[in-house]
Length: 285
Ligand code: HPA
Image 1 (cartoon, protein in one colour):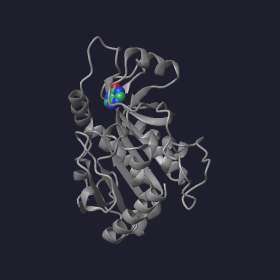
Image 2: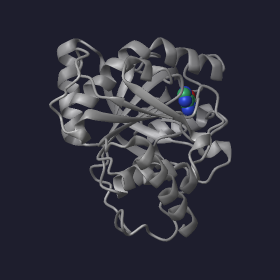
Image 3: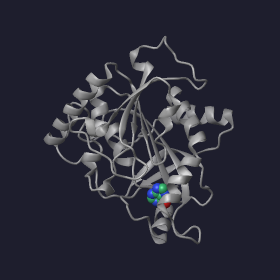
Image 4: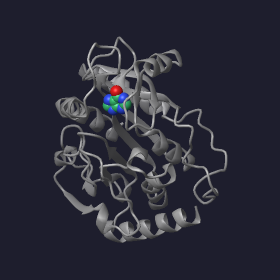
């Protein structure tokens, strides 16, 4: 962990200099959502590979760059009256997955970096398969809670005391206040937004039909291969978290056909428009 702590501190120092400003909101873009940053006009970007000690992503659909941009409201106006913190947003386009061969500690280095940089609100996006049979491919779901089925935890190892406690509370992992605000705004705009429980499996193999039945019995609504380690580490540092999942497919065994990774990426791209709307609502909630 000392090594991880050093790595996070080295990356953070570099990014702080590169940014020159102090954003308080960050977004992690999941599968198929890279390109969302094109919604913002004033931006600067840097490849992960140019940041010292930062991990590098290898998953398809994940480009791997950090983007600094100016916050816009839902109508596309810049709020120049905001202070520095409120005026800028940090975007991680491309994330790290356990299935790429990194430990949970390693894939969450960027979250430690964000905590060191003073990020207060983290918007986590992902793609998932619906376990809830009432859901449909293309639906969006606000993550209300999660189940970590990986049998591992990114906080295992010496505690990073400056960032948070040894035994962090996880009762309000996903901000209930923000869920309420975002849901109200989405309802007003007529955007269907589900609320449910996300289950983290390591992948990279998709679940079996029996695993999907188990996950449903456990009380979850969807399943995916990311986000939960990030949420655990972000919550440890006291960040306010919003989780938005794009349901790209029905989970294994629900429909009488196999799952394909390409289909998942394509479905994510098709949902981009409503996904972007919800992200803008979350940024401004
Ligand atoms: N299972 C796990 N991860 C996923 C799925 C799925 O069905 N769809 C998108 N990511």
